[in-house]
Length: 86
Image (tube, rainbow, N blue to C red; front, top):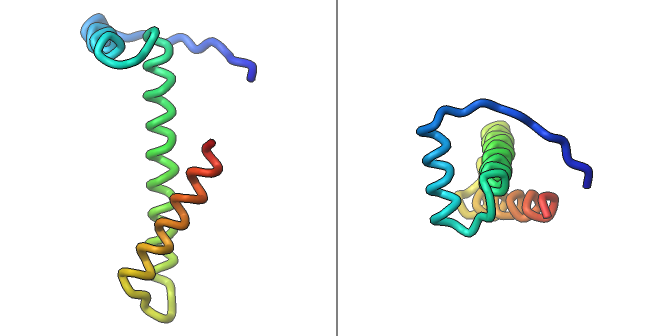
């Protein structure tokens, strides 16, 4: 996969926090830590979107579904999302 360079400015205190997280975690560099953080944020946004879609479908259903049915549907949606993200 081709990569592109992205530049951004950050204050020293923020970079100190990033460096501490790199040192405490299993990251080789700031870049690796920031890349992983961005991935997690994107995954969270996707999850929120899917959850909102499920809630909309649940609310729009003519027949009210049980909590058990809702949980099964949510688990299926998360499973599908996980497979897409691999």
